[in-house]
Image 1 (cartoon, rainbow, N blue to C red):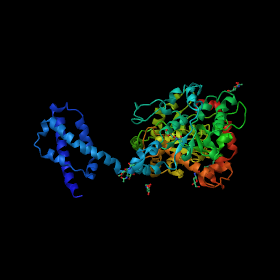
Image 2 (tube, rainbow, N blue to C red):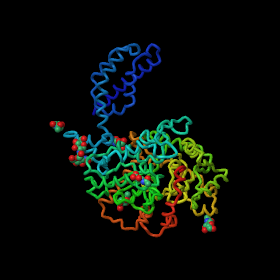
Image 3 (spheres, helix red, strand yellow):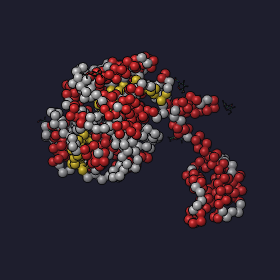
Image 4 (cartoon, helix red, strand yellow):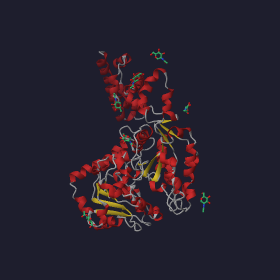
Length: 575
Ligand SMILES: *[C@@H]1O[C@H](CO)[C@@H](O)[C@H](O)[C@H]1NC(C)=O
Ligand SMILES: *[C@@H]1O[C@H](CO)[C@@H](O)[C@H](O)[C@H]1NC(C)=O
Ligand SMILES: *[C@@H]1O[C@H](CO)[C@@H](O)[C@H](O)[C@H]1NC(C)=O
Ligand SMILES: *[C@@H]1O[C@H](CO)[C@@H](O)[C@H](O)[C@H]1NC(C)=O
Ligand SMILES: *[C@@H]1O[C@H](CO)[C@@H](O)[C@H](O)[C@H]1NC(C)=O
Ligand SMILES: *[C@@H]1O[C@H](CO)[C@@H](O)[C@H](O)[C@H]1NC(C)=O
Ligand SMILES: *[C@@H]1O[C@H](CO)[C@@H](O)[C@H](O)[C@H]1NC(C)=O
């Protein structure tokens, strides 16, 4: 429109004048008592020049303001008058700003409730909102409190060695860490326990934008049962009935729900924040480990998300262990990534962990020997009396100053430490594909050598490979590419604050939801059959086939038995 340029000039003129006034006021002692609205006002206008250009607002009133002879520098009343004159202009600008970007608006209108209440001419909003939640609505079962809240009240019973109650605070993130040593960043750091995923996930779900109370439109049904926290209370009771009680109770409860019947439970999912072996007890003997949750027919139909999945079963899926970082915004993440890119890393490699003397096959002893013997390796040895390896500051400091971080299996394939090292921009070194590659299919890319190193555990066991030699032979350019790839994984492997509204990034929760919805779509809608031997599910999910593979020796089925024979009691104390 021909009016626009003129209008633009005027507004810019006013803005300039206004800025000059403001500048003089700030620097003139007489004016420092001036109240804040002025400052706020000038900030608004200056930071949104684009809105002003875009709008076709008639500014006839403003002309008067311009032409008046005003002593701008010395008259508060005039200044206020100007403010009042401009107020309607600003008010008009605001609605325009919202209409400008409908995508953005759709993201803001989050709750399905809002959506169903919109009518008539506001249908434009419905129209825009629809694509964002369609296909990812989640219905959350309203479980009796014995399946979740009452378990939390029993937090004293979780561990014999430590009071875990502080760790359920802050949505399951645990006590805030602050940043006194400047090892972390400004905000979002907590002393998070590795077994709190159920609580974290549930609290994230409470803020998920596509929760619906209408199960008929839901793509997946979430069962907010704290499976791992429940069984934790009874792990050492030598009594299978107490360990199984709630799982059996829940199976009975679920079967009675109308939501269950539609797909016979196949559209249900559950988060189990401990390793899969804690829920797969095959015999009903009091000395056997864990409960039998995952063997109950009801739970075999469901999709189960867990920090370590079984390579030999098809319905559990690995999702990241919680780390110490729970960003509140995109910027928190970017700031942290930049810090990790700039870090000086003095150690070629490092290790934080304990030996496993009671595990015959463990390579931890060799790992520790090699690290201690190398001048390029630093170690934090965990033991009953060295609590240092439980101190987030020490572990993060070590990983942030290392190029590679060794992640040998411990009691089981996976370690929380893997995600701490990714968070610290330290390239993980694995000794079996079971530690990550077959686990976190939704969160980690398939090009494993772009972000990690795999050293065959058998080679380490026979003491004929030097970890230092292998790592120091990787060219610096390749190392730097790998580190960048690791740092790029940070967003999708952290659980952001439930109140965070990430726009640029998807966090571990978002990625998990996509995976669950995709998987449940497959098992409820696709007639495509999964008629492969479930014991090969690790390679079926990874490579889409069950043919012979180089990695077969890592997953011989007999290892299934080995994993279970672990001397669990000792491990629990010092994971
Ligand atoms: C609207 O905002 C979204 C997200 O911020 C952005 O991806 C998109 O390009 C914007 N669209 C327009 C028309 O500005
Ligand atoms: C929708 O807007 C039109 C004009 O823009 C108006 O005539 C009509 O009454 C409105 N309908 C509703 C339901 O508000
Ligand atoms: C909005 O709805 C109209 C009809 O109701 C349809 O033609 C149009 O494609 C929809 N737009 C989007 C973005 O879904
Ligand atoms: C969902 O909640 C709304 C408002 O709370 C209620 O009006 C509606 O009947 C509920 N729908 C179902 C299917 O429960
Ligand atoms: C095992 O637990 C069940 C239920 O919690 C209890 O009834 C039973 O007495 C316990 N058995 C023993 C031997 O303690
Ligand atoms: C290490 O030794 C074992 C047994 O002696 C052998 O099978 C293996 O190939 C050797 N590995 C390397 C890398 O030399
Ligand atoms: C769902 O099926 C599609 C197509 O067969 C496949 O690509 C995808 O990986 C499957 N997703 C899951 C989670 O099984």
